[in-house]
Amino acid sequence: MRTIGIDAVALAVPEHYLELADLAAARGVPASKYVDGIGCLRMAIAAPHEDAVALAANAAARVLARSGRSPSEIGLCVVGTETGVDHSKSIAAFLHGMLGLSPRCRIFETKQACFGGTAGLLAAAEWLRAGDDPDRVALVVASDTARYELGSPAEPTQGAGAVALLVSSAPRLVELEVGVSGAFAADVDDFWRPIHDKEGIVPDGHYANDCYLAALTGATRAWQDACRARGLGTRLDRTCYHVPYGKMARKAHRHRLAAEGIDAAAADAAFAREVAPSLWLPSLVGNTYAASLYFALASLLDRERAAVEGERVGLYSYGSGSAAELFAGRVVVGAGAFIAALEIATPLEERRRLTVADYEAIRRVDLEVDRAPYGSIQPPARAAARGVTYLGVQAGRRVYSNERAPVRAQRRA
Ligand SMILES: CC(C)(COP(=O)(O)OP(=O)(O)OC[C@H]1O[C@@H](n2cnc3c(N)ncnc32)[C@H](O)[C@@H]1OP(=O)(O)O)[C@@H](O)C(=O)NCCC(=O)NCCS
Image 1 (cartoon, rainbow, N blue to C red):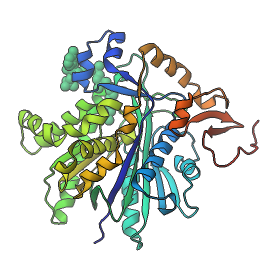
Image 2 (cartoon, protein in one colour; image 1 turned 120 degrees about the vertical axis):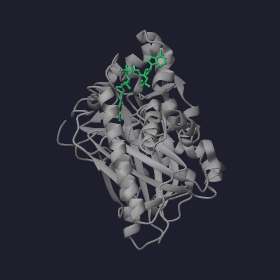
Image 3 (cartoon, rainbow, N blue to C red; image 1 turned 90 degrees about the vertical axis):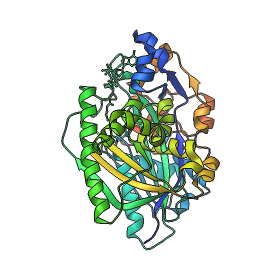
Image 4 (cartoon, rainbow, N blue to C red; image 1 turned 90 degrees about the horizontal axis):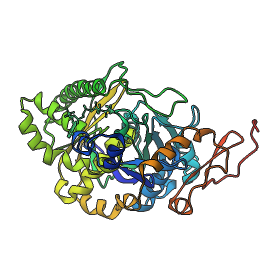
């Protein structure tokens, strides 16, 4: 059977971040609650010119450039997001123009809360398996900006960012076990974001955690059954979890190992090797919703490099509402050197620290950003130099800094 998996990865993050210790001081909370209790050091703050399209475009352009792939090789482009910008036009359609993808490329967007990126990745892997062309390459991007009400318990778990993955039949990073997957779904109200509302609603974060863990139980059982049916073992060397905040991954690992009869102390000891390396980037960026699991995978690969080669990695994706899936892949020999060459963490090195007052000012203008007239959003010159920026709405249409086609007359003035 053909090898299918993740060939390359690249990230995009907003230019600004907030130290959670600064936010804790402003909210009158001990910094240790956010840093140790929740497991986050910094959260990325998207400025008005950094929407989910711009972040996706910048991650996608970077993965093509760093991997040496050409836009003409991409036969499928899927974007997973829960903070898309249009009911109709997919972010994949924006990327098609911005990247110069082939007119023969299949494009669409996937949504199911934080599961959207995984829906895209699994669709891409199955698309590769279904075709008879071993040179097919898919571009899967997960891109989101996570916002909650200022002062709410969820506020320290915001974030923003995008991950772009190339999926191919000659993967240089992770060979996926395509078709061996454990899905779990339930209709629950643990998180949602109504249309025209930029802030997500977590009615009770503790209930959301319970839904995440219940889905993990269901997905794990389904995955174990799928493995046994194919004569595969169920041992995982490492596990990457969806990371709404770092502590959730620790709770998840304890929960999964408890089902195998392993107590909390032993699970925490295993966590240090099996999970902790995956939490490096999420702890610096915050919740990136659909992209979060892939920030975790990128962290594991970059932190561990040659040490993780040949190991079997579990990937647990959870999207509120809810859909979950557990699946696995094996890190390819040589991935350590390749991930080093991809320089995935470089975008984080160029960030600037915000004050809490600056962060709150961004949040105030952010509420109106989807109706901002073209010209009213003026990104700093350095932002334009870093990549695509959102510039506002002209004649009812969102305008970006690297448009290939001129703005056409629209029906609304
Ligand atoms: C996670 C969340 C529920 C925490 O909010 P909260 O009710 O204010 O926080 P808690 O009082 O439960 O404290 C959080 C943790 O910090 C710990 N903590 C509190 N104060 C602390 C301190 N000073 N030092 C160290 N730890 C501290 C608590 O013991 C708790 O740890 P535990 O979870 O291991 O029990 C909230 O941030 C949230 O709703 N986040 C969004 C959740 C989400 O996105 N869920 C989606 C699942 S996909």
